[in-house]
Figure (tube, rainbow, N blue to C red):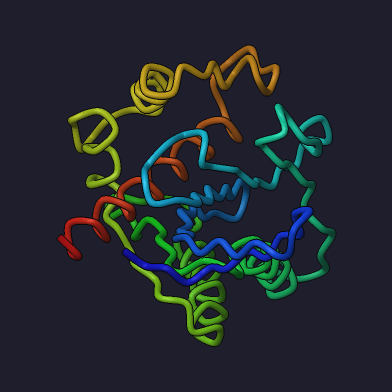
Length: 203
């Protein structure tokens, strides 16, 4: 196990030093990025906190003291946009021992070059920070969550609800399944996949 993070507390008698593993899973995108941070040696939903960006003002809030939403910053160019999103992400996972993001999907369509440029900026900043980064195929994440490598967003959400007992749509007051809920779910399973990879490697 990785034992890098030391949190210093101040109980009534002296100081308390707690060292534990911190890993981060990122569902990275231009329109709705989400981050899951897990602290602890045992995988538990209760050990996770989540951060996400949204272009809808109602999600710029804290939900259940576990989901921290923020609005995108304004930008004047694509370069400024990528810099802003990546700076937000790096700030949230600055104390991570290791980070994982989903690799590019081979069947991706739309603004694929913009997606690659945006992700490239994040990868470069994490490289500069010296934080180990794993890229995980989307099919691997989906298979961990549902048993199927081509699982739909609905199946991923259902798996999350069954595993955690948390009705995330209700937590974020959402009527129809959409982002940021789907992205939060993806970040959770990216993080869990990384956790399993680390344990399998060390065992």
